[in-house]
Structure formats: C-alpha cells, structure tokens
Amino acid sequence: MTLKNKKILIIIGGGIAAYKSLDLIRLLKKNDVEIKTILTKSGKQFVTPLSITTLTKSKTFEHIFNSGKELEIDHIALSRWADIILVMPTTANFMSKLSLGKAEDLATTVLLAADKDIILVPAMNVRMWLHKATQSNLKILQDFGYFFIGPEKGEMACGEFGEGKMSSPRQVFTYLKNYFDKKNIVKERNFKALVTAGPTREYIDPIRYISNESSGKQGYEIARALSKLGIKTTLITGPAKLAIPKGVTVKKIVSADEMLNEVKKTLPVDLAVCTAAVSDFKPSEKSRNKIKKDKSNFKTINFIKNNDILDFLAKNNANRPQIVAGFSAETKSVITNSTQKMKNKNCDLIFANDVSKKGIGFNSDFNKVSMIDQKGNIKIIPKNRKSFIANKIAQILLSKLINDRYIN
Image (cartoon, rainbow, N blue to C red; front, side):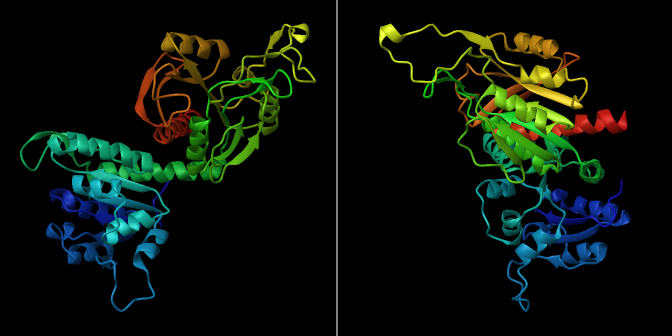
C-alpha cells in the first residue's frame, strides 16, 4: 500500500517537540503526500512559517480570518480538503481546549468543524500527562472519537523521565501508513458485518411479555463504529429507544425467532457481533386473549428454549462468518462462565461484562469488558463510555479480520 496523493492537514502545536513535525513533513513528502499546515500562535515560538512552507511547498495557515479572501472560509475548506487531520505536538493545554469544545482560533475551529478522523500526538511533562485533569480530558477526547498516538516513555527536554515523550516522526509515519492501509483493504474487500443488539420480547398474551434490561446502547455503538471504519454494517435490533446510527442498515425485530430469521437473511457476512440480550426461553404457547387474574382462569405457563443465535452463527459450517464475536452478561464468575460460553458455542471471541456492577452494563452509558479469545488470552478494556468501548472493539475486530485473512 502507499500514501501517495493522500491529503494530510497537520496542526503544529506549541511545545519543544514542535520541531519534530518538520521531520514528519519530510518523511511524508518523500512519499508523495499532499500536506497543508496550520501553525498555532504558541507553535510559532518553536518553528517558523518559512521553514514549514519551504518543506510543504504550500502556504502555512495561521489566522482564522484570512484578509483578502473573505469568500474562502479556511476552517471549513481545510477540514473538507484533508483525508485526515494530525495535531503534533498536542499539549495539555490544547487537550483541555478540545475537551471543552472551544473554537477560539483557526486550529480549534478547524477541529470542531471537521468531518474527518483526527489524530492527536501528545507531548508534555510526565506529571502533566499523569495529572487527573489531563487523564480526564483524555477519556473525554477518546469518547469524542479522537485517536491518539503515544505518548511514549523516555527522557524529556526538562531532564525528567517518564510517560509524556512525543512519539517519533517515524512512529507517526508508520501509524498513518497502517491507518490508510486498513482503509484501503476495507474498501477493496467490501467487508460486511452484522450486529445484534437490544432485548427481545417473548409474549405471554397480547399485552404481557418476558424481556430484560438491555438498552441496546453497546450494540448500537459497535454498529456505528464498524460503519465508520467503512464496513457495510447491518444492525438487527430488538425494541430500543435509540437513534439510528448513520450509514447503518437497521432491521427491527421483537422476538428471538424474528431476530434469527433476520440474521439468516443477512448472511453471508465477514463479521458477526452478537451483543443482543436474547431471551433464553419463551412460552410454549401464547394466549390469544389477556390472561385474567381471576383464579378460575389462571393457568400454568410452560416454557421452551429459544434458538441460540450466537451458537447458530459460530457453528454454521455452510455460511459461517470469518469472525464470530459474542457478549456475555454475567453476575458472578464472569471470566469462568464467559470462557465456557465461548468454548461451548465455538465463537472466536467473547466480550464479558459484569452486569451486577452499578454504573456499567444494562441501561448505562458506561461499560467495562474483558475480551477473551480461543487461546485463553484476556484483554481488559477499562471502564469508559460505551462509544469508546465500541471504537476499541471495532478496531480489534478489524485488525483481526485483516490479519487472519490477508497477512498470515
């Protein structure tokens, strides 16, 4: 794959590491990348517009209002021109501004108006990076959808050692190359995914049903994240009061049987992610009329098992997705029970979460999951917003999809 003709907008922030942005520009220009730059007021203290322009062979933008070009709105035009936006270095102060949604200069206005992925490359003193305020801003920005490269551990310009050192231009270059490589592969291979989400309802009579507390939030966010990566995604959802993710094909169902039927219709796909909290049981028969509480009319309700959708997908030899991932909502022995579930159903990955914990899981905007693979490896994604968790999961699944199929 190549970076040739890719368009990258680089915002140069105010920090001693700003000079390294010039080395990155050299690397990118050698690979025929088109570059435009924004130099912040504080960045100008470390590098000059002349040095940047000499390397990019393009104007260096500095001011939000461009005298003499009133019809050219730079903060819109620049963000629409770019394939991706890079902020290097990203200081603690700049992270704080972005977390508050400020638009006080050209750089912050461009980022707030951007419709492209934004990558931040932090550089600051170790104490500044580890400060609770910075770490809080990090989580906010990750939830907003910003990507981060680094920081690394190393010796700082101030003489201290620790995490906060900016990633090298070569590391940033490699990240950018991998980013576009993945984009190209997804586009070329036309990857397709299905995601199940939300609860199902199993009716006892016309007005009563068995269901659960699932809101569908995690599944909706995963569908949104996969679609954002360029994967054609179908979301099969039980009753949920959530906004439809942009670019996602949505099929609404009520019962487990309806969900299974829609899953079958959606196949074949490359990837299946089962987040739905499907009812394990359903009444053996549904009363045509409301069951009255009068004892003379009361009857015993018999239950039968529902079809297992995750099991069906993972053991579907004729039309099995390349990767089948499931969710395991547990209240005790979370890892043990989830590992056993993964083995029993033959899925490739299981994402375990403890729904007994307050503040995560059902009906919460937050989650914490443990990813378990067939080799017994466990990767914990710490508590964060479900949108952030979804982005992490989507990246993991895409990497696995590409590596398993095209690299190994």
